[in-house]
Image 1 (cartoon, rainbow, N blue to C red):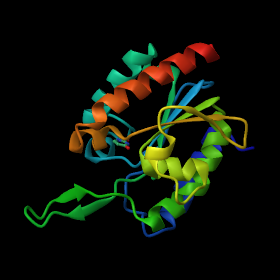
Image 2: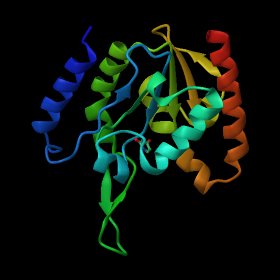
Image 3: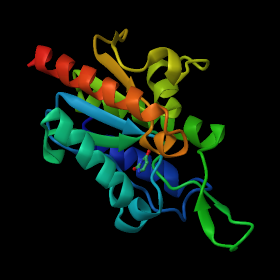
Image 4: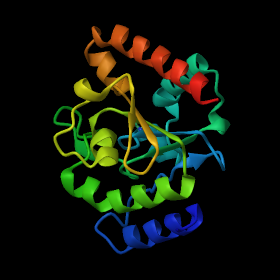
Length: 194
Ligand code: URA
């Protein structure tokens, strides 16, 4: 099994040799032996600027999430499936705006995510939204509506706990209650694990 640094080095090498060579890589970061590894979709603008996952607005969501769980950022490990910011040109402004990661981007980064999970070795993986859910389960047809809010045993002995992506809640306010209930269920599960 590779160590975290080895996984990062291999990833960096592959990116530099790819069409993504000019992009900023946003690596995962966090505790050495975390119980919980959180996996998002891909970095946004703030993350690209700072070179760190879940900062800026997503960082605020993360803080609220951690507060409910009674955890500190340094106590968990935080990463994304895709480690660079997927962008498109805005028709209105001509500026770069976020877009969902493409299938090609996900396929490029997936092997490194798998190695990263092995190296970090969390007991619990929390995914945010469909992209990391599909990546972690390996189920192409997995949808968050079927998986969210309960612990799901994975083949490797870890446990998956899938949540909606916080951004989905902004666009669909009805999801807020579901998300809040899921977080409480996650808190209860964490207490059981402790
Ligand atoms: N920021 C991240 O790093 N990942 C996300 O999925 C969203 C925002």
